[in-house]
Image 1 (cartoon, rainbow, N blue to C red):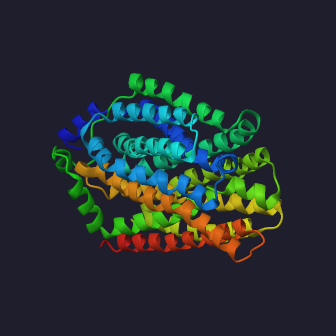
Image 2 (spheres, helix red, strand yellow):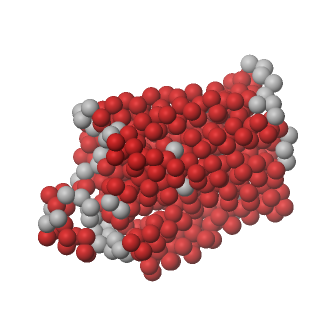
Image 3 (cartoon, rainbow, N blue to C red):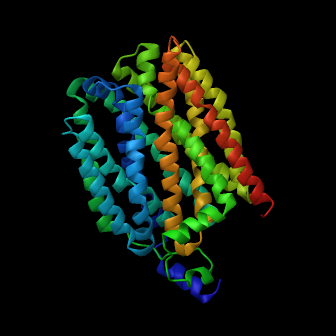
Length: 428
């Protein structure tokens, strides 16, 4: 290791204990980020009843409305991540989206709730990309899969919090109270970040020649990098399809248990948390472990892991949503959640490694933008439209058929990850 590399590492606050503390902070931020994303799906039934919404409108509120604001804000956000102090930026963004969530409790119409949710989305567009950029400077490439796997396990914690509490809170105190409960911790955590999170040296684990390139690139250069990198395009395409499936199904899981299996809102929330939280945590962490292990064998090994786990998720999900028994449904949806969550570590750490240092923040942000706009934006809408379509066809339980049909997106995503793995393994 030469002198410049040694100096960079000495300057960066990457001591073992502190960097795991940082990962813990970023984990908590992402928990709150995910909690906010899940509020609409978790409260879909009381929202539908209060504002007289169709499944397509619920899909619009949870998907396109949120993701369109996310996409617009992500353009300048990518530039900020590559140029400003990321620790301070993260704290400010957390304050903004927490405040918007708090104001959502006062929404008096679908229009006002949509506008506030779009404000939440705009601030959240920089949350995970900023965190991932920081992680890339606290963890070496050999550990990023594990670090990202732990980071993305936030979905499990957020899912447990939202679905375990939302049904009970909405039934006892009204859905607006849940927005208040979700907002307050973010304001407190933002203060802790300002006081304790130190900005690391950019590119601490990258080659010296890349760190020497001080000038950050613009929007056009970041998008050119994405478009010209075919391996990255396959990864993003696979991520969009997998997230479309996951977001589409996630948006209607509590409603599924209410309508198909006759549960109360509280029971449905508990059942959703039961099948999603532990399965998601295990899937994210196992996926990270398998990704790091597989990459030691072949460059595309991590994406081959995703190919296999995503293909396994398809029949698990289809059986779970079509099952007539709720016990069978819970068992197979648990397996679906476990296998589908394995994709996160390879996808996000892969995007990090395929991004040049000087535009890494921008590439991560714009890749995440595409994942959110395509996956979280279209997923709930597609599942909602499928449900409404099966209803027009006279299906007895249109929602479960629409959800089962949505699992085909996961299979198409697996094929994209296989293409990315083959490109990496052939060194193209």
